[in-house]
Length: 148
Image (tube, rainbow, N blue to C red):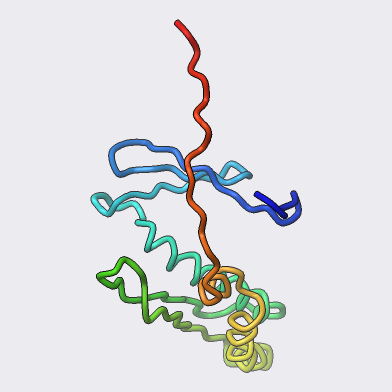
C-alpha cells in the first residue's frame, strides 16, 4: 500500500471458516464472524451499517457522556440495498436521553451538536462512504506450496 505508514494503516484479515462463512481478525486479536446471510452471522452489508452506526455512536458517546451516564443510548443504521448491488438512503438515527438533572440536561443539549460534529468532521467510516473512496481489489502473488 503506497503512502501508508504504521501510524495510518488499518487492516483486518479474513479467513474462510466454511461455505459462505468467514472470520475477520483485527490486529489486536479480536474476531468477528460474518457470512452470506444463510446463518445468523452478520452479512457484509450489516457490517457496513454497523461500522457507520458504531463510528458515529462512539463519537457522540465520548462528546456527551463526560460528566453523566445516559439513561438510554441506542442507534439504528438503515438503508436500502438496490438491485445494482449498492446501498442508498443510508441513515443513522439516535435515541439518547439523559437524566432530568443539571448534568443530564447539559448532556442532552450537546447531543445534536455531537451528532453533527461526528458527521461533519470525526466519523472516518461515514466520511469515507460519503467521499466515495475507491476500493482496489487484487489477487495476492501466488505463494510456493511446500513439496511433499
